[in-house]
Image (cartoon, rainbow, N blue to C red; front, side, top):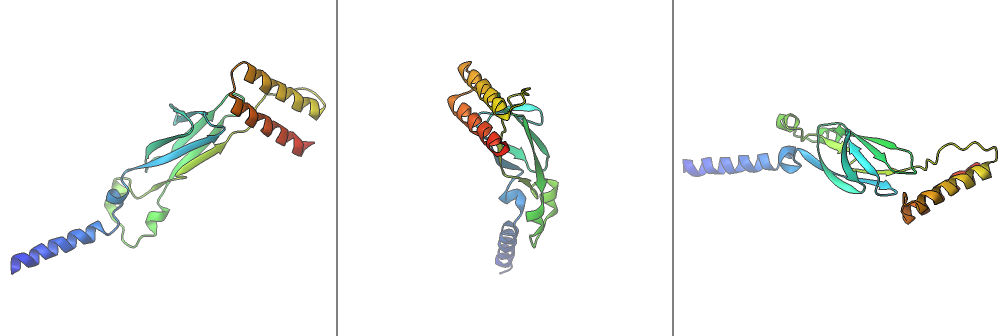
Length: 169
């Protein structure tokens, strides 16, 4: 009789621990983050280490801060920061120290990063805004002809340039 009571106690304790929301078991120490850019195929570095071209998924430690740098020919370089946050974990009723010790008590914010890159065609010294826009479009056309831009990136770049000057004119 005593053995079945001990077994029942162990089973109940194990079930309680497993269902208590221990983040080490439910979420793990790493988090998959989706990284995108518009236009795509931007060269990306995470904390200074080149990781590839967008879009991609990457597993990152939940407890570290990450700087993500984006670069693409014809566009301004962009930088984003991913931060660990324990906000969701802090809302839980039961919290365990092991979650903090193993870095599972945090989530990387944002979990899906999307960056819109802006055109950068360099400074043009003309007084007329229309001539300036035409010169930037000519540069984009030259980059397309030289193979520095894909047709899709060229189209996106032209749309961004014309939208910028449409609001400015």
